[in-house]
Length: 67
Image (cartoon, rainbow, N blue to C red):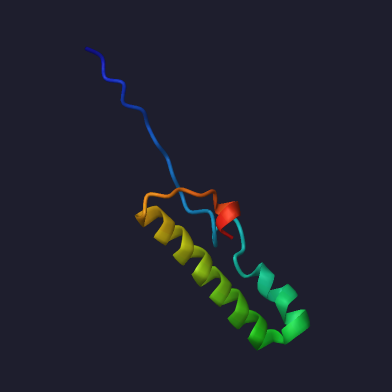
């Protein structure tokens, strides 16, 4: 019997192809450079945390809905 295994490729494009810090520049216009960086880092932390929690509960949500 022939195997039906496929090849799956995955890569993390955040930080490599997409800047996760670009929002910090916009935030800096409103809150100053240091506060802008801090808010952006906190936002990213929670963004990832919420997706990990949902995944661990077996409740998939598209990334755009979680964030």
